[in-house]
View: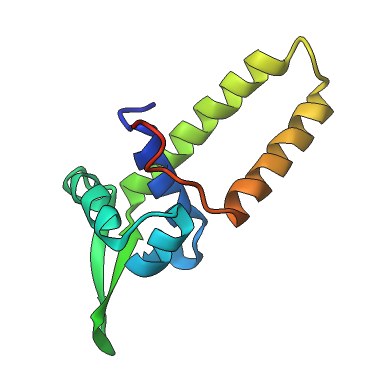
Length: 123
């Protein structure tokens, strides 16, 4: 979707939901239920595309952050809009607009609070 695999979109989505649009690699790995090396492998192509960048902690050189860039935030917003349109098309004949909005809110809360196994997706 929008040139991204689902696992890449989930990666960017987690950063988009994080305070300051940045997370330590270890925290991103926990949220995605993957290893830190998987986070590094996922970040490399997204970094080349300009969607994320690396950032060092000025107080601790051992800590590295992955930061969502402006183009990355734009790509997440585009993908979110597409997913919302798709969901509307799928559920329009079955549910009211209010029910769809409630479902969207509930699913958003679910994905924000529970890690997903993105390694299983696309395997």
